[in-house]
Amino acid sequence: MRILIGGVVACVFFATSAWAQSDSPQNPNTSPPADAGQTAPSAHPAAVTYSNGYQVRAKIHKVASFATLPLFGAEFALGQSMYNNSTNSDTRRGLHGAIGTGIVSLFAVNSVTGVWNMIEDRKNPTEHHTRRLIHGILMLTANAGFLATAATGPHESHRGILTGVSSSNKALHRDLAIGSIGVGSVGYTLMLFGKK
Image (cartoon, rainbow, N blue to C red; front, top):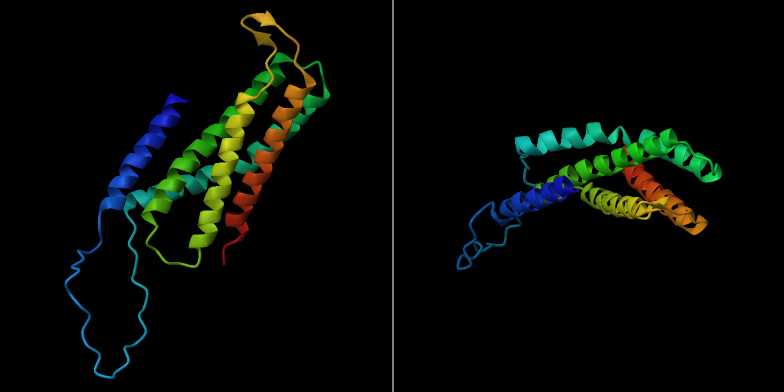
């Protein structure tokens, strides 16, 4: 968790320093040249040049995202089998925890790379900007849902004393996981099939 917080803080630090830089100096005392009755040709959008870091982060984001749907499917199947079967083995619980940790880690990496690239890409007026923004909001929402899912996971011991797992804890954990998987899947498919 400390690594995740450190990564987010570093991302925000570097992103704000990039945000503070201006592309061209602005002089408020200059006025546009007077028009002598001629119409100016339509302006073309300016070319946008991305840094090498942007390209590397985009590649990491894309490659890591290939694990999203397989992790979702494996975690859902394993979690549902654990929910339905009250006698779960330690192996199943360990595998369920490992896959859940993989999902949270994947979302941490993709959140840092995605948000950082969105900040660098903020001045690019493309038609894909809205789609990327919606994708980012959905994926960050799913990330928060996965963290809530991990926090509400049913535990069988409290301070070393074994306690029973209530069905309401199990149901809340399952419902948060399914909701987060759903939101994350919508955000993922938006980018996967939303390309022209």
